[in-house]
Image (cartoon, rainbow over all chains, first blue to last red; front, side, top):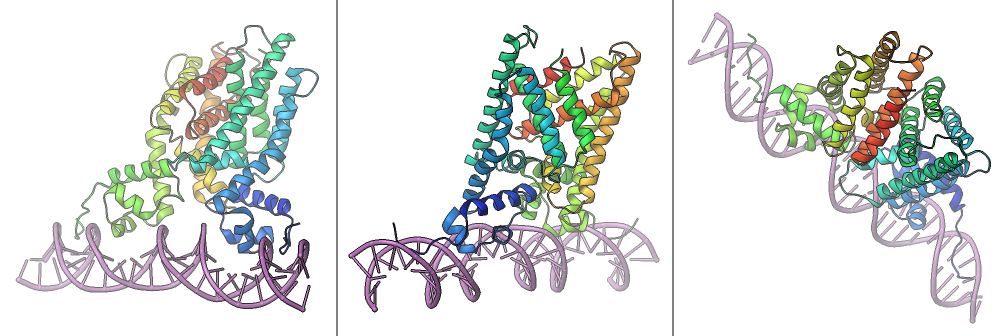
Length: 197
Length: 197
DNA sequence: CCATATCTGGACTGAGCAGTCAAGAATAAG
DNA sequence: CTTATTCTTGACTGCTCAGTCCAGATATGG
């Protein structure tokens, strides 16, 4: 083993706290002191372990994706009826948005913040790639629903997938800006209705 | 007339420039120097004329609404077929998002930024009220479309209105984060399709 | 021409920020 | 025990920012 003083904190736990802070307050509005306070570590420990603020955000987004987004993707790929999976996806989105005090989605929130900077940062690229991935998964599920006869043969998988991702992002946005559960349920109902056309 | 040195700049023109800066860069990322630079006025002139940074943002949002959002509302209330007006609304949204270099919507962008602050600022309230107004207008147009037989009698106007506003906000968000015109057209197509069920 | 009121330009202030440094503490290997 | 390595703590640096102050400029009204 390599010598040296061991870390006094759990890296993953600290990262999880960082996710929460960025999620609630946004990147720019979060200071290093906000982070160290919630993460329960010292300033230098943060820089040693995670690099600078933007690197930490990158790791936070990755961790957020694993914890929050990946399970949503899993819903789409679940066994059973593809069309039901799509419905479940939106119901679950309502549930997630209704709990958790209107934090919205870390990737959506961060995307808005970084989109204005002109420089196409790796952060922004990562976020876009994640949503592209969601669109692909949606498209795949839609194709399966068409094959199984749950959706009309004339359905355009790409068009419907892009549309559903758009509605999904709209819901996450409205969650962040304070929408009620009833509001989100109405939006979800519209998305679900578009599957039964 | 009240004595005193007259303003050397056009208040409305300067405000319009402020709108552009906030729209592109976001509130926090915009410095007073950014503003004075683009507005073509001195620092003290800005504070004399518009108050502090947040007051200026308030006026900018109001001006943005008058210039950008009010015309969208007018589309819904236009004479002729209400259902056609809804379709036109989304087509126009695609056009607006495709031009103008991915600035999205000042109110959506600002809403995300202020939603994290906890304190329910007047800015956030104003933004929410605007979108509530849009939802009301949507609902009214939908009711008319039901009466005229263009939409199914069983349509729930509130549900459909909330849904369409959600899709609309999703489009504005995707515009900000860099979506292509094709992407936005697919989302709009989904919204329009939901009117023909 | 003078008094009054407002606007302009530039310097200034005080606070908050991201990131660094250095001295000491804790560990493992030999 | 000694040495090499890494972590921790707290002070520090340099910068940026929002907002203020003040002296000078430009207008109106008498």
